[in-house]
Structures are given as structure tokens and as C-alpha cells.
Length: 248
Image (cartoon, rainbow, N blue to C red):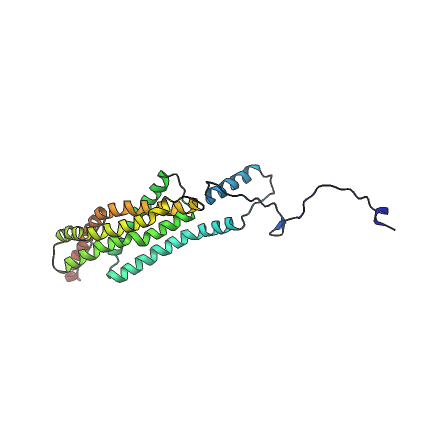
């Protein structure tokens, strides 16, 4: 007895393999991105899937896209931990809980500059630009540290606060500009880069360059003003505390 006695054999077209993902039958969609960032591609595919797929179908990411999504979710937590670490280090270094706030005032200025640069250049806030913003946190605080540290040195010598701020701004202007320009010109090739993979690296470079430029300009003006304002507030609290002590 042969097989043809019990079955009917017909030739047809079918898949060469049945792909499963997470124990479910799956269809894998792959693409080579050209002039399109990975984050934008994931957003477009997710929107198309929500609009076109029937009810009951689900989507999931795999490979580089999955790692990109995981990394993007973890960057927000990394950003918060970085800010906390910077504050604690500065509080220990300056032995104050107020002056680190003055120094870290450069952080929102840098973030504002980075977001403005991404907006002007038509780029998005993705994983790479977020990494650039995290890099900025360590780069821009050094400008504030140079100013605040020298103001504290002058005040310890008995210089009046206004004179100390003016002299610190004059003396520290040159090293601040030198370090800022060296950082900007060092990252500029990445921001202007072309060729394979440039679409991924350029947001990082643009975020660092524009954030560094704006924070350097505004730090020289905002940080000294905020330093004097917080100093007045601290002095008022100290004077009130001293007045209350005899009453106790």
C-alpha cells in the first residue's frame, strides 16, 4: 500500500517556516532606516499597527528596537539619580545645602538650550539626545563651581559680597570660556557629522553644543544674581535666629 491510496497530494504555496515569538505565531517586519531615526520609526510603526491591525493582534519589539525602548525608559531614572548624586557631592564639598542649588541652577539652563537646539534643527528627544543631556549635567556645573568657589574664597578674605561677585566674574570669565569653547568645538564634529550612523549621533552632539552655549552665557548672569539672593535669605534667617535666642 502506498501513501497515494489513502491521501490526495496537491502542491500549493506556503510559508517556508512558521515564526513564533513569545509562544505566539508572529510576523517579523524588518527595515533599513534611511534618514529616519530609530525612535521616529518605532513611533510610526506603533501608530500604523494601532490603526490597521484587527482586534486581537498585538505587537512587540525585538532586537535593536527592543534595546532602544528599554534604554529610553531607563534614562529618566538615570537622570534623576545623576542629579541627586551631583547635589550630594556638591553639598559635601561646599559644606552647605544651599550653595549646591545655586550651582545646579546651570542644569535647567543647559536642558533649555539642548531642547531649543533640537527643536530648531528638527530633531527629537530620543535616547541619544537624552544621553547628551546627561553629559551636560557634568559639563555645565563646572562653570558654576568656578564662580561660586572663588566668591567663597574672596568672602573668606573679608571682601564684601558685591565686590566678591564682580571680581569672581572677571577673574573666572577666561577659564570658563576656555573650557566651554574646548567642549563645544570638541563635540561640534558629531553635531555636524554625516555618513552612516550620523542620524543617531547628531542629536547627541546638537544637544551638548546648544546646551553648553546657552548655559555658559546665562550662567555668568543668573548664578551670581541667585547667589546674592540666597545669601540675603540665609542672612535674614540667621538674624532672626539670633534675635530669638535671648528670648529662649
